[in-house]
Image (cartoon, rainbow, N blue to C red):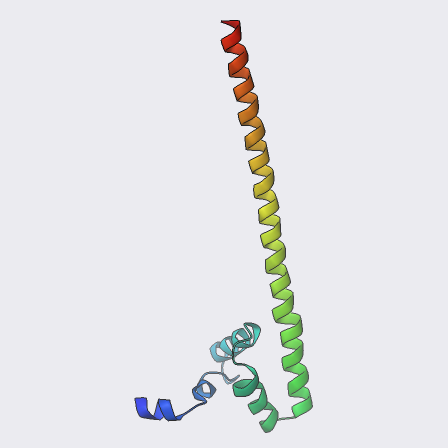
Length: 110
């Protein structure tokens, strides 16, 4: 592919963003789920080539159920990890305080 043709072609993603094969389909769905340049190069072109109501329902449900659901799962996992680390840090600090008190008591006894 000539670099001048690439610069002239504003819709270079159309070669890759399609449902013609499994890898391209996975790439297209990933692009839609990341919400990066999916409306104009993907959804609008499929709306113009097929049934626009079915296409809009498909892409909007993919975004609503896919991207936002996955984002909520990711945030829930992050919150769970932060809570677990907080509990571990509290247990570590309690052990440190207990060890310090035990050492001070041993020094007083000697």
